[in-house]
Length: 254
Ligand code: PEP
Image (cartoon, rainbow, N blue to C red):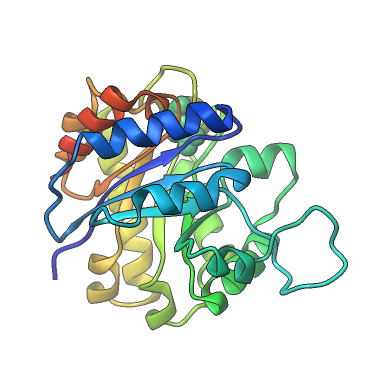
């Protein structure tokens, strides 16, 4: 089975509603003809989800994601958004465990495991983000660090559940810094992640899961990164706010 090759955009907390409409119109106008194994996932701010879904619903292989959801099903959790609410807006994907959520909102591996469960139970596809900070990389312990993130947030799932997940490896030192991991560094970590999946599950499961690279992906470096054997596309922050730049990234998918 061919793994899905995915260009995912993370708009974070950027753009007015009107700017978001314009960016979507420009992306849609580029009319990418995506083959069946390619996908575009746009993680837009909560208030824009419905509009984004309406603007892209006729575009094949385009999906709308939320950037977060809460772990509980419903109830007195003021300000939170449940996975079921996202599904009711026809949202299909959700980012879980972005490093900014881990850092600024103290989201632990255990809490993220609950969000993974809530997302899967609602029928959403989680895009699970993992990755190490600079001191971990400098100490050379990044593989063990990422393996722990995987095991504490994902490895309670059975193989069928795990197969529904997309993984994004995002070294924190490369996010929003302009400093991209080399294609070799990305490939090494993606292969290490796949080997963890194989150890815990089996080779077929490990081979079936898309692993995206994130961290200062741009039009100019996407093709080199995406060409690596275990890199199945990218999760893109800054460069996804520019339609032409993000279109170049979509066109760089294998
Ligand atoms: C991200 O937010 O997931 C990200 C990778 O950001 P950037 O592309 O701006 O580094």
